Length: 296
Image 1 (cartoon, rainbow, N blue to C red):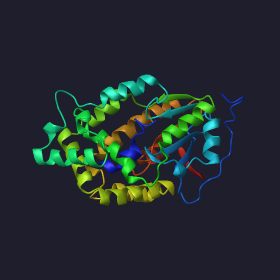
Image 2 (tube, rainbow, N blue to C red; image 1 turned 120 degrees about the vertical axis):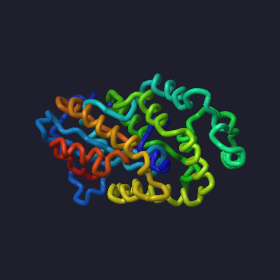
Image 3 (cartoon, rainbow, N blue to C red; image 1 turned 180 degrees about the horizontal axis):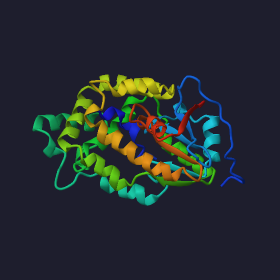
């Protein structure tokens, strides 16, 4: 389940033009193999754009094509999952990464299992586990991602989009608050999160192969294959899909109905939110919008 988190959240990684031309014409992608989509119709004053991100990836693999840059430049504002250029978001996020109450990581495991996690952090990450006793186990998984990438220069897609936004003097907004995102992870039992972390550590070679496949699918912008990966019985997320994806997607569409009405916006959220019957592409089409694949 946790292997899809990089596609869902860009939480902890780290545009005005002289005249906004909202009549730009971008080339359609005929195969649907793209992370960039144009939203039009339903009496929108101008098209808006939807882009799928990835939490952590080799910097050279980040798919920011010229059409994406044109779409971003033409939009009046940028919407991400969080307002990631607000320092308060980052500072608040550090606090909200901790478990509620008196829960500690050590209390979530039997002694032998905790020892395996502790040994991995000491030997492979060179980090004492005592530093993270109160952190939600799901967030600890993020520390493992660099171990699964074949490069030394890594970045979050959101981080690169923020650079483009600042270059183009675009205002950043968030579809959610840090407190809400933290509550999403609080709704999944900490014991379940702890077992997922242990499972990842115990089966790291298998997870590394799965992660490599996910990165390849993202890099090639193959949304249909991305959906197949989510359905994987060993690494998928079916048990918590409603919490991590579906409900949030529906909430975002309600917001976007208002946000997109009078101005063009660029929406960048985890690529996992785009796919499937409850994904943003399908939900926006059900609302009556035309959602067109754009070459990227």
